[in-house]
Image 1: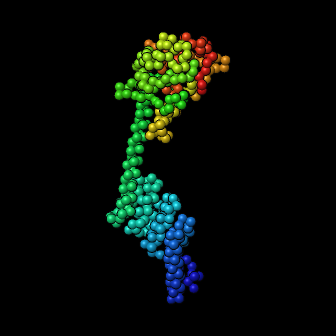
Image 2: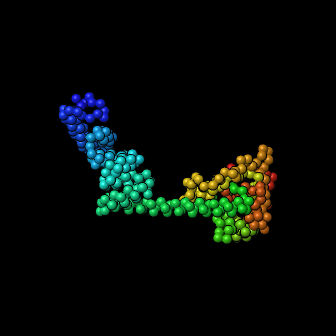
Image 3: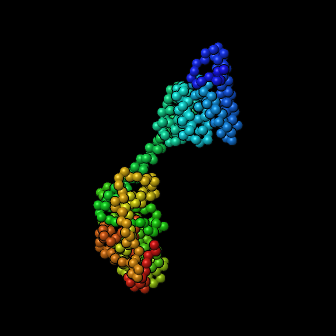
Length: 365
């Protein structure tokens, strides 16, 4: 009997030929029945999708149908995998269907749809175009082609935004390195948000600057402090706006223009690496999720913290000479800029002044 024939051997008798024909017919019948059963399971809904895939797989394994028929079954299994979100499997099935029948339009559609779901836009577009070559008026393919074009356009726009954000951040980093400035971990972000410096067309830095009234931890914010500006100019403007009449919390009217002094904290903070600085500049931008910048960004890390006052000693407060520019102050080697420049405002007339000058007051960390 043909059932007992060795693999690869040819039938020698009419009986063996008849047996083989009968076996092939049975397998073909079984494969077709499994295919139809799989189609029924698909119609029955999501709970039966796994049963449909099993039927299609068993039909393929019969190895009894023509290439064009097997192509249809592979395309059907691709369809179910798409419905289940198994996009990689769907793509493999659709590609196999195309190999078996290069005119299977549904296989091209499903290959394109799976590729789109995997964000393989070039592949998705290619499969869609090839499908349209065989069926130029296929509505589903035309609609999918428009969807791919739209997603591709959005992707290109997003990439352009990311590239621009990274470029701006790198220019900022280069400007800061050129000036020898040290950038540390951002502080007081509840007050400053994701504000960052800006480099103008003349390569001049403009900083957002936070002024903290140390006595009560109230704050003022200077949105645009050009590095070439002197402190006196900005303090004069603030005094006109805020000190007359007195500040709401300044019951003794201690904080007059003549009495206030400005300080920064020196010798504290940990200098960030170049990569960390870039990441901080990219916060709140389209490039906030970029992790690789194409160059070594770790060589500038300062691993030894200066941060926090030493035991038994207060912070080192350095008074700002109001006739100096912001650039002059920021280039102090002991000044690690906490994200953006932060300066502390105190008044010589206040009782708090002695405590501050003695180093007994510590800013919140």
